[in-house]
Figure 1: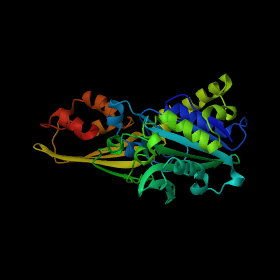
Figure 2: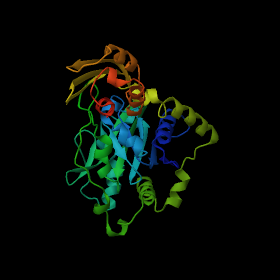
Figure 3: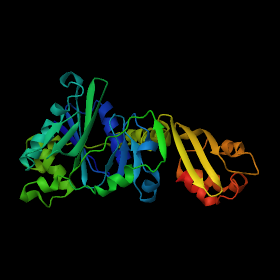
Figure 4: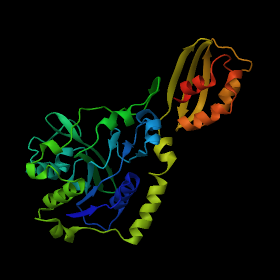
Length: 337
């Protein structure tokens, strides 16, 4: 079995590398990939990014947001998480059989002290009933690809902050994430591994999956990316994982309801979003204004459904002429918050 240990901590680059290697004929199957990434949120292929991710929090705290090719739910990752991926011949793998696909990882964890680790449900690996690994799978070109996470020492407090969307009400056709009880692996490891780093954890898994005694022995099975590989990975990253339209524009259409009662009247906004942009917005309520609110509806149509974009458009719209007596900032907070 060949392996690739990616050198970058950028999830977009790592996913682009996965995709490239999935479609490449340079590697002899089976292949296992390992990578670590800085703070990020990855949504599933069929999800509504705008619904799953707290955009404001992620933007303010430098959390990268991207979309993967496979299905499943949204997940938060940081430097305390290790990702692994297997690429195998589709003829040797039944699609959806995660238990078989991840068995080398589970066996390795058992050797490291996590004896209660087991695959449960559709695609999770748990210990003591708590999830530490989520997995996703897809098939293309005669190959089956499965990737998963391993929470060694993730800051779990960030999960709720990055994945809780502060929308009033939202109706979407996207596939919703199901939040599970989660745990880190570190407390379950044998004493000699209690202070292990994520990089050391990766190297130890490589040796166990390949059945060798040291990472030095494993080097003979390592595939190193060439300059030609890197150039093609650049193109994939630009086309998909760093591309706004792929990350947000692929979101299914949905409707947001924003309603609040002010002393000068009630404002009820219904926002229809498609491909990450406001296709239509309608205002209802008992508010007063010198101008017809349909003018504002036209101004907002076509804008990206993003806090900073909405704030910019609203600040340039003289809102008091539409919502007389209601402070401009309160209208902005309602619509863009």
